[in-house]
Image 1 (cartoon, rainbow over the protein chains, first blue to last red):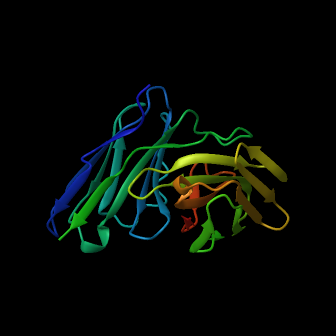
Image 2 (image 1 turned 90 degrees about the horizontal axis):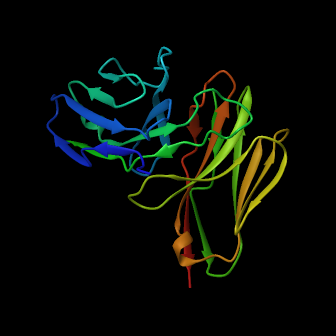
Length: 118
Length: 111
């Protein structure tokens, strides 16, 4: 079946503008995650949605960052008043279950959106 | 907080064996994952360990020692296509299924 998709694949924006990034998870996956990956760095957790529970926003770096998800479908990550340090690849992942148990519940990643703030 | 440490870079020869180490410090450990990421591509799942010991999957194996906060990924019969970044990630109890990633180990396979 189809994997996780993200759009746009690339986004160049001017400092101070708002951007919206989209993620379409694998159908039936109840959990959705956003990560950020700066050049040469590891993945940095941003936010995590599990079903209808309140999202875990503990990784959002500032109040300029927000995300929404409608049910178990599409999610959008919004960055307001972008700064140059926001330049990174934003990766979305989904998994079948959100609860941590003995099973791996591996995360399936999308191709990412490369954001460049000029 | 959590600390996850991996070597930044490694180089190995085609056909050889390479071991990529990962050490972590975390409370409430609930599993360790290895992902492979080729340049410009999304990470893909390689292995998962939650109990001590070795998990083997084809050319790839992963080992975990919870008491030592240590894992390694073992790649056998290296191929050129194994050149990639290898990411170690830890899951914690009470954290749902979110992962904390190390910075990754860039592996270069040479002839």
